[in-house]
Image 1 (cartoon, rainbow over the protein chains, first blue to last red):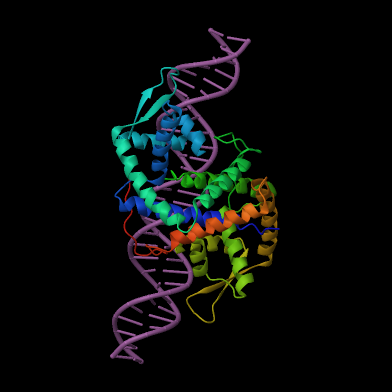
Image 2: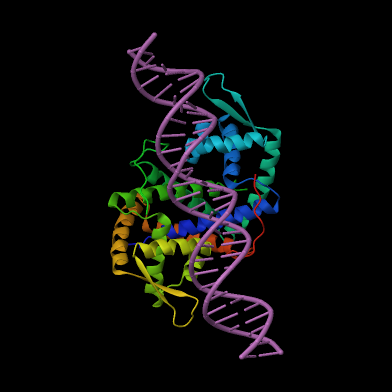
Length: 162
Length: 162
DNA sequence: GGACATAGTTGACAAAATCAACCATATAGC
DNA sequence: GCTATATGGTTGATTTTGTCAACTATGTCC
């Protein structure tokens, strides 16, 4: 048995990471919460990689978050004018999201902060190790994702509490 | 440049992991939140590895959490009678925490749930890969921890917001 | 047209994190 | 011993995140 301190390690890392990022962003004067930044990045990334603009739905799936939460993140980004939405000509229900010029500028700043933070984080690790780390992480995520309970507000079982 | 999807990967994994754990615990009928479980485990682990019972302070440091939060977690565990506290003979301010018999039983059940979940998570990965993963994760955590802002409610700079 | 699925929004609420203030005890310097 | 300051712990207030459920509007299938 491995005694599984994976969870522990994971939690600590994620926490440290969030803190570091928060600091890094703050140092550069970025006033967005991490979730907003992630969303903005994703919209950009989606746009860049698929060519087509992003829908809220796509974000929800990619980020594995409740769509309610996405709606709020998007709303904030819209009101900060970092992204724009336009109705999808192919589907009247959905909105296409695109990063504005301001958004691009923000992304540049974000990248700068991240470069710093990730250099700090990756200190002493080889590129290969980092790649491995990501690969393993993704594999585990996939492993956990597959099996049972389908994501995305799936009529799930009521939460119990202490 | 590595394009750093580390953050992404990390977030998704952590999220998937929490969800999986929640499910696993629920399946076994454990009604504790993840944070409580982590705390209970830590108290036990501390006790086992150092011989001495654990203080709230030690938990806060190890879990890298605000002490206020720890106080609440501990309070819950106490009222669930999974742990007990007794005043520290060496220091009138602090309380020593020990796992009760009930707590031990709970830990057993927790381990069972975890064994399942981590088997699921680790599917297809070698033991070596897992070890590597943890090692890399810990290294990164350490890297992030060291540098600047000392932890633990350190008179920190006011948070900005959107 | 009707039944049903999907995109997105919103309200309500639960859970987690953070901050600041506070009490009691410790410790150090005098 | 007395004072100043640090530390362990608790609590209240507030913010941020995450989750559920209901609802609107549109799309799809038959």
